[in-house]
Length: 104
Image (cartoon, one colour):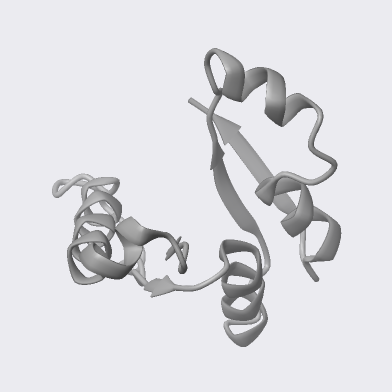
């Protein structure tokens, strides 16, 4: 799943495109030739990422939330180191199931 943050000027004018692009990126994560027991359910929503991810995890009764965690470069890396809650931290702190953050 992916949650597109609401409220930014970009999101307002490009909402449909952002949602479609996010869906394509998620679909590309599973290789066409991959042998999976059941196909993944892809969900793209708009809203606050923390709230939306927690809401979907609860609705689907998730056993595990797996999140991509990526490094910031430059000033973003310095600023994020001092923020009390990143998205992953907020989800891990409020989720009703384990959360695995995977770097890449």
